[in-house]
Amino acid sequence: MFTLRASRTLPLALLSVLLGGCINGNYMDASEPDAAKLRFVANTPNTTLDYFDDTHCEGQTTGTLNNIFTRDSERKVGMSFAPPADADGYLELKLKPEQEAYFRIHMRTGYVLCGISFNLTPERNAEYELTLNSGKGSCKTLLQRVRHINGQLVRTPIPVENKGLPACAGTSPIFPKLFPDTPHRVALIDQIIDKDTLIPREPDPSRSERLKWSPEKVDTLIAERKAKLGFTLPDAYWALYRQNLETFNAEALGNEAQVLQRYKDEYRQRLKQRDDRQLEQWAVPADKTSKEIDAARLLESRAMAMYYFQVQKTVLATTLSQHLDRMAQMDAQYDVCKRYAECWKLSER
Image (tube, rainbow, N blue to C red; front, side, top):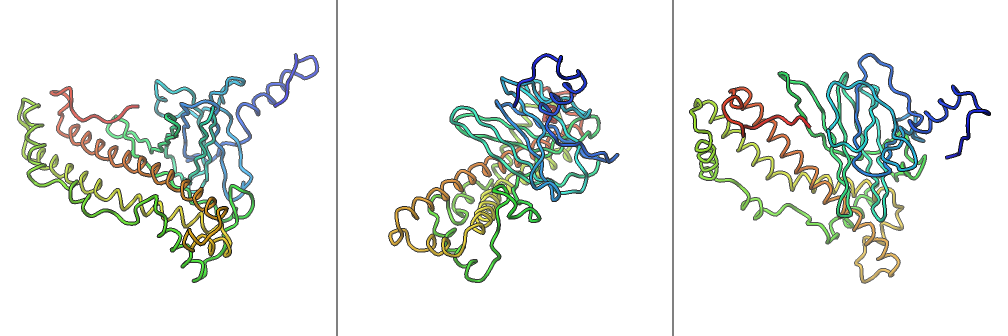
């Protein structure tokens, strides 16, 4: 940043342009009439959101949020729903539809550093909301598609996945060079992932069995709900209620396998950045490697453990949100909210 004194030396128009570029970054909103829209809500200090695509491997900035030394980015694109009432700061972008984009969130305060990256291919005329929160030394992000259905807002979580940009591979540390797969490299990578002891290798069947709801459990949940309502609903409502409970339980039981698969895919992608020599060193038993090699491997393992737990939270949040939306749509279909204040309701955050 630089300091600009009074406008004796710079015309007001030029001063406004320079300050606007500093505040709002250099990203140019998409001009297509069916452009998608994204709102980024940062409930964290000193936060930035950067944009990348196949023709902008160096990245484009969108401005800063919640920085005590500068004004917040003033980017707004007229989205159809209001921002969260408790949002600390937010900005909005227009995105080229049907084109894969890569986003990087960066936030640093004290000892907490967040660096979250993900891919998104926006749909035409779609609206999205991305939120970032921090606490207890960690960061949590949530990406949602937001739509208006029957006069209400429906939010559908979208998994936050970092797939990189193949066209940009090797252009910067953000997009490192990936070594091509060979049978030898694939075998080494499999060994490294399989030997990692910080994360379970496979889903625990006994845990799934414990969490599986019996028909009697579902009957109990339905009976408890009927007792709370105090009025009669048709059998079709309760059949749908049962279906929604069973769907939620089935999705929850599949979460562990989904998290493990995403963890392994991410780990494999990171290991593709390592040359054959390093993979060979990391694949041998720990007691046969040097302390320096062990330390590097442990650092990578811990980074992946943090990724695993972040994905756990994201997948759980997605499962819960989808369940709540199904239940809310069910209650709206049968006009339950007109008679029962504690009905399932669509989120309007």
